[in-house]
Image (cartoon, rainbow, N blue to C red; front, side, top):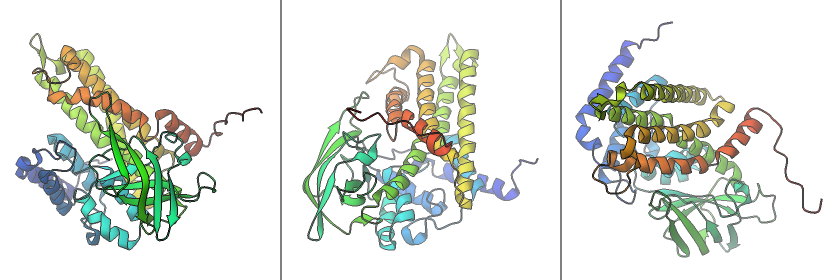
Length: 401
């Protein structure tokens, strides 16, 4: 079997390398500001990547994308070259990675024209209104309601663990519009400006010391009834489209490989008693095990991409991505902290921090992502029941039964 690349793809790789070298000064700038919004450099970099077809490759030009044909090998080569030099692979947030793919599948032409271009170019930032205090893993149990009043919905309720709500411009939110319908029915998927009167955002500080998540309260929030994706009362189907893309984002193999590249750099630069850490046999063994898992994830991602291009359902292959990816990312961060030794215990403003405390923060934050987006326990249920066809988990007996 000949696994060498053709002249076309070798030429493509050379072009990607030259592009990254020519634009090094730009991509080395911060891609976001202190609040997490895309910076001017981030938006400029994103626009260049779209133009080159390195991101948003198949999104039609009419919606602001590159408008090209999918090419698995070109996408693979570009990702390899970006990770090789540590260049950001474009903006990634809930709007770009979750809402835009949902609109492409479920939205109207008018919604696509209105929202996709400014979203993929970082001009509009979105947050996701899904989880509630009593409806996290059991999302279909959500109680936030939207009642009709003339041409408007009036929304009342609460969401929690809402990433980016403190600086987002828009929210895609699940609400119950038919309260008497079965819990998987009667849910609608709405588009809501975050500056609408009646919305209150309260930050939630996590163990990282930061407030990436928020509580969001809705008190008689008025929204035109036409601000809906899909059919009224059929939002559960739309929501699952978003969840599919969310779990793919959380288990992105590119992130794992980029993190490992940063660990390798530490191991090549840091020494103990004059010996580079990369030469330590026990650390080498752990590194190789993690690299093998990351490589398997990358190749698995290509399998899923191939299925998507062929219009095939990958089945259980798609369901393992979030579970595997989030656990691997946490283990990579834990390995980096072990590699740093006593420096790995530092946190805050110590002058001895490496990577500005990236690994300490990532170790704690990635643990939360094992829970967020559907806990690992829920993911295992989904894999067993939907993917492998095993019997559903028994429900607890009713009280008094």
